[in-house]
Image 1: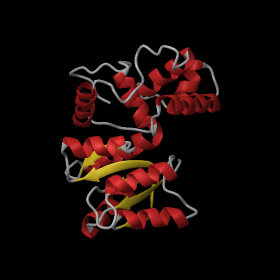
Image 2: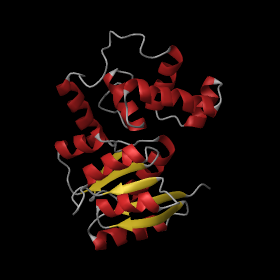
Image 3: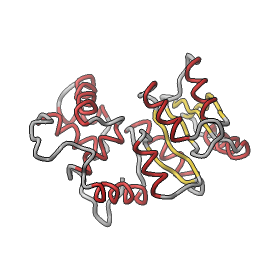
Image 4: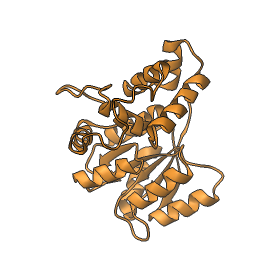
Length: 226
């Protein structure tokens, strides 16, 4: 079983210790670092040889808040996936965190089971949005009229194969599952994914999913659950 290395950034020590205790009960989770502010997390990543796969990130912290920290980490360490775990559930907070590269967004009053599920999903698939967050993402796309992406008239932006891969990513297939389905190697899938990130100017797989929603590769319906 592949161990998932996890780091936690939160200025509330009691909450931080509690979430660490919860995570370390899982056989495949390994908490490697705790930070009480964003700057401490950035400094750790600048000096460590063992990087986290996933960071649980609070928003409101001294010295460097969660949004700015996520922005820095996403630029310097794009392979690290960040899950916002915060008390702030406003649309602006959610939109800002996703815009700077967060792969998921959880409120601190969520269930322990959901936290564990989200970490596993983000590690395996690169993103996880619950129904409420997805609704806010969708509303933001509608209100912005898709201005953040290239026009639908640009039909030559993606190749047919890239569109196939993107559709499968949006439908929550892992790299191995996409490779098996398309009869290509996992390395080829990774190549297509890197091309998709570059062409769509997405920060990570979560950004590709948002692009897929904008391009109507994902249809939002009342029973939609991602």
